[in-house]
Image (tube, rainbow over all chains, first blue to last red; front, side, top):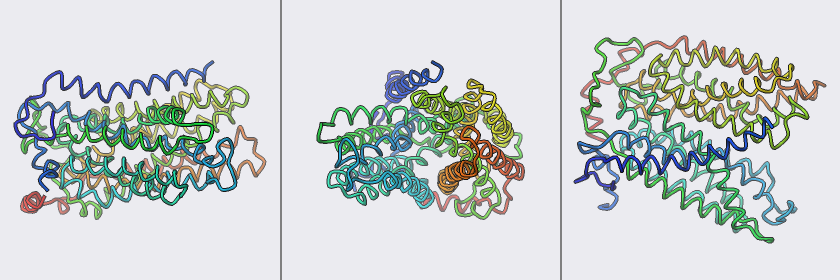
Length: 43
Length: 459
């Protein structure tokens, strides 16, 4: 994907995987760390 | 001008074949960064020891003065969203996201300079003013774009983006701590370097969102989507001009709805750690309380997606009815569970309360769309954000002062929050009534077609 829409190609599954991975991986990392810390509440 | 023309609204219109599922990640690129504001407090203690390093020196900044950085940022979030909402709406999402990236990233860089020369006013100006403007622009920039791409599920779409804002602190807090550990030395706490890295990383991340984002072509509809032919009482197919919305009772009623919902949630969120330790003395340690706060963040984040998606099925008004009615019951039950020493139910109560706090943020853009149409929903949302700014002051003040008053009156610490919980429940009753009074916007407030065309031409 580029900044420009002119001549842009259609979205492929790879585009979607990259875009969602770009935001999903850091978010899942954050959730995992938080859940590990949260377990201390019930220990 | 040539280079900047790539930011124009006209250059952002999607070509056929563009998937609308690329837009939520673009929005998340912005919200996962600006939501860092919730984790800014991890810098407060290190910034109070920039000179003394191991303990605060007389010339070091005081924690009370450092607390103002976040407050200024939240004030400018509300102010910029309200003032610049129309600019965001008419210029398109890419220009706004680009400006948000420069402001938010730039705010960190200016603050890094302020820390390195030990001038607090420069940090206020950097993260507080510049960063706060980036927060406001970034917060509202993807909202109307998502609503346009997902006319069939506007709640879910905006819920996904605003979920990122709720979840960002879970990334930012450990990242900040790690960066400071990397840059710190026995004679240096490493805050300025951490600010530089975070400013650059966040700006790049946000620019990726600006690159990905697209607007749908005029008249575009999702495949297979047939707009309902049966008009719904509380969903308009007309548009209301941004400043005309201020003249409607509906805007102010939704303002009260948001303000009450946020006041109740934000008050507990800020005190969750202390509250859990004081209501369960000896059972909840400081480390466990940290885990409790983290768990609430997850509920807060998940609630944004869950409740906003749910609102697409049951309607916005009904969703807020659930927030206020269920919230009232849960706030009233907290003192009972605390008194009974039932930690699991106490945690569950607050988890659900915080999910509804997040849900209130995430559902409100779709509520505005239903009331005022799609054309200026982002700008109207910007004006509504002022309710958040007010709640941001009101909630913590209510909880802190009432708790202190109770303790000063001789109430044991474990019971000092009971009255606060009942007052929060009372605020939800006010929200319930405001929500009950919301009716469809009167036809005289709707824009006529000529006005719409004129404004689109200007844009």
